Image 1 (tube, rainbow, N blue to C red):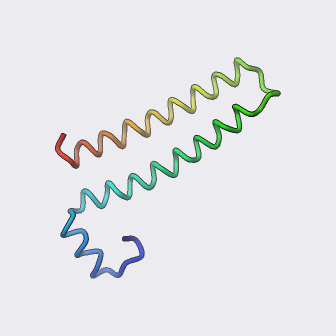
Image 2 (tube, rainbow, N blue to C red):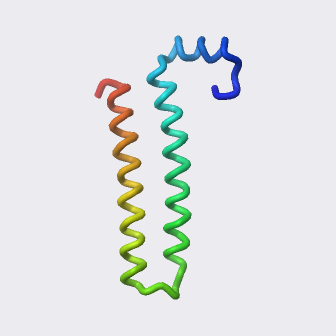
Image 3 (spheres, rainbow, N blue to C red):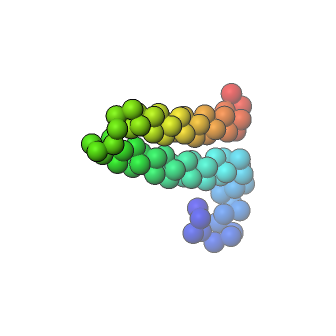
Length: 83
């Protein structure tokens, strides 16, 4: 969609609706952020030099961020799909 000519973008937006296009764009952005958080979490989990309590707190903070991304996307999804 992003690399398509404007005429094709307009046709896709008309067919599926702009809300769904925005949902797809949000999905890609959320997926990218979740991959970053996952990579950070794995690095923390593998760091054996870190104090276990500090490691646990950092992992919990990352998991909380992941949950916020899921919640925001699900809220947008439900809004678009009328749930």
